Image 1 (cartoon, rainbow, N blue to C red):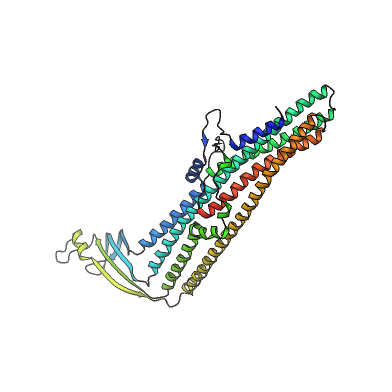
Image 2 (spheres, rainbow, N blue to C red; image 1 turned 60 degrees about the vertical axis):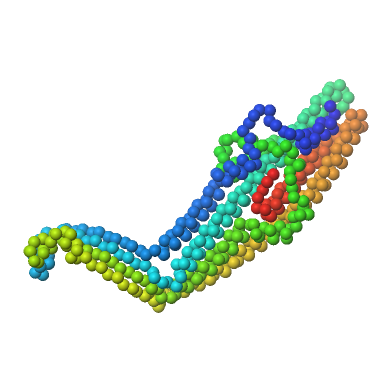
Length: 451
């Protein structure tokens, strides 16, 4: 079979073949990769914990509205000269005593400091929910990108394998011609050098597959010793990609601002900082509090004056029962400027959150415009590489005819063959690169990825 025919068959197989493994294997589809990563990725798990911490902070601030209630129970034993409860004189005696207390305190009015703190913590919790969503979306996109990279690297391995087979076939034929004395030995040496170069390219391509699989396993938090076989789509070239004309960067940016979780998180953090500023300002005003306590005592030397006998346990508790209730106003006058400094820091923090939002939005717009420019360049590169493959194929077909007739030396023939080989690789790379770039634009617009 002619070399040009073999190369043509390869291109047809790449673009249209339904590739199925000969032996049933546990394959990983893109959806399976995304689902597994969302459940096991370490960074996502860490963001889940951050969300949980913010929810606990909110819960604690809500419970802060309730009064503080604390109880205590104590007991003691003493021996020696102690005051007599009846005569107020000192007597030698052994005494066992116990006491119990119950205290209550709480704010009646604190200029809405606690309510604003609760509101701020609630907004922080919502903000962390969007950050978790962002982490999941980013992970899904990274997994999809890694998946496409594995497919690209696998295709480049196939291209290199075909090139090695072609060069090997040429070398075998040339050896026969050299042995027959039809061509000089230098032709054989040239092909042996070309085979060594093609073999090196194949090893590099195979290593790239290993590296891209390792990257995928890192996203999945999958053991590096566990086999990973991607489920190859029937036709990568037919993957649905939005028309570039419908992905104007300003339009994508406008839509992204309504969908982008980080943008929503930034807005919530600004509102949280506003609430926290109000909460800290409220601490500059007086605070109205309520407090109360209940207490009682027992001692084994406490005698009933009327009977002269030890007063029973229950009666002692009743006779010594003591209760208080009161209101208080706490007025901040001077505390080393601590609270005013806190208010000033809250203002700075609010401004910082606003700047963070502006920086993130600016970065988002820059990323979208960059992605659009890269997509335009990728499409142009793909169109040029498609033309290049057709031109290289024609040149190779002519070169093959001349080489078979002895009108072309081995070096020129190898050069023509290498140009076709490189054009094929460039086209495959350009096709995948264009898909990458368009999927990135779709991700910014829709915050989801699909193949």
